[in-house]
Amino acid sequence: MVLLLRSQEIRKQGAEIDALRMGMDWTADDLDKMQIIIANTYGNGHPGSFHLDKYVSTLKNELKKIDVMGSRMTTSDICDGIAQGHDGMNYSLVSREMIANMVEIQAMAAPYDGIALFSSCDKSVPAHLMSILRLNLPAIHIPGGSMAPGPAGLTLEMIGTYSADLKRGEITEEEFKQYQYSACPSCGACQFMGTASTMQLMSEALGLALPGAALIPSTSPALEIMTKEAGHYLVDLVKKGIKPSDIVTRKSFENAIMIHAAIGGSTNALLHIPAIAHEFGIEIELDQFDEIHRKIPFIANIKTSGKYPTHYFWYAGGLPAVMKELKDYLHLDQMTVTGKTLAENLEELDKFSYLDYMKSEAPKNLPNDVIYPASSPINDEGSLAVLKGNLAPMGAVVKHSAVDPQMHQFKGRIKAYDTEEEALDAVLSGDIVSGDAVIIRYEGPKGSGMPEMFYTSEAIASDEVLNTSTALITDGRYSGATRGPAIGHVSPEAVDGGPIALVEDGDLIEIDIPGRKLNIIGLNGEEKSAAEIDKVLAVRKEKWKKPKFKFNSGTLGLYVRHAVPAAKGAYIGMD
Image (cartoon, rainbow, N blue to C red; front, side, top):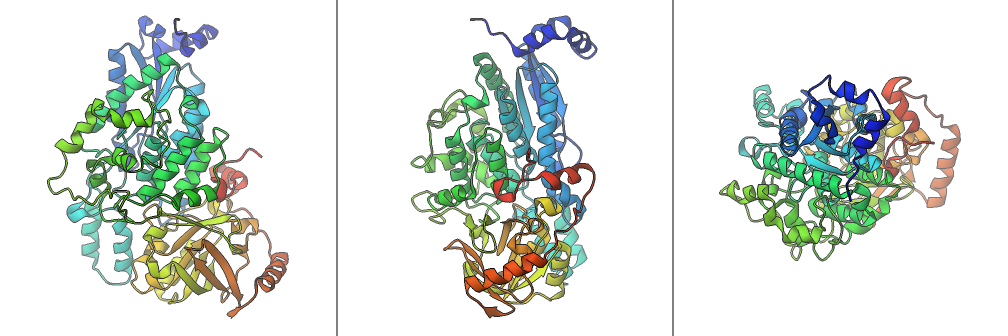
C-alpha cells in the first residue's frame, strides 16, 4: 500500500501552496517530498534555548539527505530564572499555554506530515508535550540537554542561597559576583533536578523521546548524534502512520509518575502532567501522584534533594539506568517513538550510538552513588507528598525529600501575606521567627498567574534556624530548585475564596507529611475543635470579598479568568 502523505492531500486543496513554497528555499522537486515541521524554542533570551538553532539546522540537513523537507518554526520561551524577583514571573506559567497554542497554529495552518520539537526548559517542554498530544501527528521530542556545572560543582539554584546570604551581610558583594558569573558555564537546562530536567525526563518516560535523550550534556557530541537519529525515527513514524495516540496511554502517565518519584522530580510536574494528559482526555488526580510516590523508591542522588548535578546523572546511565532499577514497577509494554516498547528499548540500548558517550566521556571521578539500586534506595518512598485538610480541601504539594525531617510534623502560628514581596521582606528583616507558618496567598493561577515563590523559600531554606523551625505555605508554586519546608499549589486558591484566604495572623496550623495532612487547628492562638474552626471560617467567608482581577488585558487577563485550579493542572479551561 502506497502511503498518501497528509501534506500531499492538503496540497491538492490549496492552489497557492506550491507557489508560496517556491518563494522560499524550495524547488519543484521538493514539493512532492515528506514535509516535517521542526518546532523549536530557539531564542537569545536564555541559555536553555540559545543553542537550539544549531540542532534545528542539524536535523533539517539530516532530513534533506533522505529527501524529506524540514520547515523550522520558532516560538521562543522565557526563563524562570531570569523572570525571578520581578513581575515577569507572572508570565511564566501562562507561557506554557501560549507556546502550545502557537505550535498548534503553526502545525495546522500548513500541510505537514509529522513534527519534531526541540526544547529544554521549564515551560517549553510541557508545552511541546501538550501540543504533541493535541495535534496527534507523528511526533518526536528532542530535548536540548543539560548545562555543565560551574567550578567546584556550583549550580544555579545556589545563587538564590548566596543572594540571601548577601542581603544578610554574610558574604561580600565581590564574593557574590564571583558565584553569579560562573554558575552557568554552558547552554542547556539548569544543572539540578528542577522543572526543566524533570520535564525532559518526563518526555522520555512517556515514550515521546529516544532512550537516554533527556539531559545529555549540552557540551557533548552525543546531542548532535541523537538529533540525527531522532530525525530518522520520526520519518519512520510517518511512514508507518504511528501517532502519539498509538504510543501514549494512561499507563504511560503512570510510568512518568513512577519516574518522577524515583528521580525526586520538581513539584511543577504536578501542574504539567495533568495538563498534558488532559489533551488526550485523560484526567490525572493529585491523589494518583501521592499513591504512586508511596510505592516507588527514591534513587536519584541529584540536586536539590541529592548531592550531584545532572551532568553526573546522564553519565551514570541517565533515565535508562533508572528504568532498569524500576523494571519491577514500570509498564514496560508501553510503546515509544522507536516503534518498540520500553522493554525492547532497554534490551537494545547499544543500537543508539549517542549513548556510547556515557562511557567514553564520563568523568574519571564519576561517583558510584549517583543512581542508587532500588533494593537499597535513598528513601523507600518517592520524593513528593500530597497534603489535604481544611486548609487545602483539594490538595497541596510538598517535596518532602528536600525538607528537613524535623519539619515533617510541625505546628505553628500563621503569619499571612497577600504578596510574595511582603513575605520576603518579613523573612529578610527578621520579622519571621521560629514557630511561624508563613502564608503567601493570592498568588495562584487566577490570582497572579501562579508565579514561583523561589526567593522567599530560599531565604528560609538558607537560614539554619528558620529552615528547621518555620513553614512556608502558598497557593502559588515554587521553583523546581526549591528546598526546605515549602508547601505549594494550595487548592482552592485564595482568589476563589479557599480557606487560605480566610486564615488570619495568629491562627494555628498543623503539617503532618507522613499523615498527608494540612489543617488549621486553632484560631487567634488557641486550639479549637474542627467544628469550631469550620464555624468561624464560615463567618469569615461571609465577610470576605472577592478581589478584583489583577490583570484586565492581554495574556494575563485571559489566563487569570480561565485557568483551572492548580490541582487540575492550571491550564486554560474551555468553560
